[in-house]
Length: 164
Length: 164
Image (cartoon, rainbow over all chains, first blue to last red):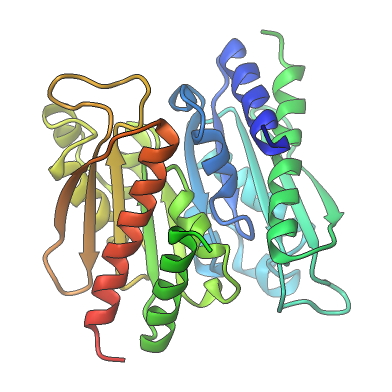
């Protein structure tokens, strides 16, 4: 069993025990987090919905990310990750929403935002959303699967914080 | 290279050549189709957005599927597949939308709708949406990956119909 499979299983179990529902807002992972969770039987009790917001228009229209944030901070930024996670929570019936936006490569990197830079957002009902950044190395595939593992770890952490 | 990878590559190429954008509406595949397309560099030119509508509420709220259709026909039905695909087209800026709704198993099967039954919808701008059904055998993983390959094949077919 891969790390991602193991993490997805633990997330599913923690959420099932606590009756928590999840939503995902994915840019560079493009559906992989939702796919990892729904690989498991019983996922329908936990994954409420997922947003694959690959284009800027999708981030604005599906999640309510502000065009101004995208214009001034860019799609790969702390602010966009926060607005994506908060938007996924607001536009779903989930208790926890995770967002991922990064430069998976091989193209698209800049000095300021290199390939491998990924921002994660986490929104939990009744709490301020928070974000964190990671810089991964490797191929597009490696950046994406490290991003999935990180997003699942973040969801696992907050789902375990809640009393069952 | 797996079948899915090869198909995704051909879909991406056909859409890039013709300037076509895609949207996905996934229930039982839970993000796998969008993930397969975004595995490829250059996917941002083609995948406009994806809807992972695992719950009935998500199908209604994200895609405009009618609660009456879900109530009378069920989530795994020709009518729901058609409404999901049409809804993904209407709620995106894509030219082609594919939908998938099925019983991936291992639970959830009935005599009328056994494990492995999957409905696919395909909506193309300016055309009537159409649907088709498949009955796959095997594990949850096999039903899901066969579903991804079928959805990609459907998208490939219609994207190649358009003049480049």
